Length: 310
Image (cartoon, rainbow, N blue to C red; front, side, top):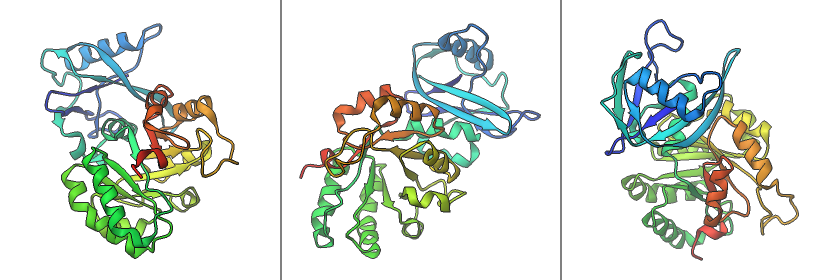
């Protein structure tokens, strides 16, 4: 069990693992192992009382992260908490710190805890630009994306296959100041070099065909990395490539590829549950599918046609 404590300012509580422990010096979300016959809520309450000296209020599930440290396997069940009694104390940790989730350096976290932080700070919607927009529609496309930022979208994928890389990078550079001012991030589809050149605020969505080429993260932790996946093998390769999240498709039949069989919600739920990173449902999705995706263990929904006013 892991407790993700969020204070009124939106900061999260991180605890530093003490000397002599596995991964000593790294930061994690406080918690510990369930005892035999114990419910998740009871175990979380007991562990946070023992580790922090607090009595917790209502908690809600955030994410579950299956992980392996060598031969040691665990399932990290993270719950979100906004109410508790007493000030947290480092009773079993080296130190505690309150931190802005967006400012936390993921490299400082224990590896299994990185997915918890990503699930906390990633939005539930992930719009992807329509693929049929031509390069001549630069101004119209920029206006469409600025409108999305104004509506509150915080993660946008620029997937414009008709555009030369240079023109697409120009579009991303033009949008970057406004996106950064709103705490949003833009991802280039498949263009790792472009993301590297543009720097923080610009990430990459790796194509499924690119996953085998990356056995380590292609960008710094300050730049988001997504991965386009269709099965368990690709989700595993996305994790090996250091991706922060994945899209999994097609969940439903799509208008653009009606001949491709959809996996359906039960298969999506099974794959998302087994994945060690947040997963967006993609393929035939709209904002109306949000709750279903969340109930199936997904981070939220990603989509194209239904996410733009065209």
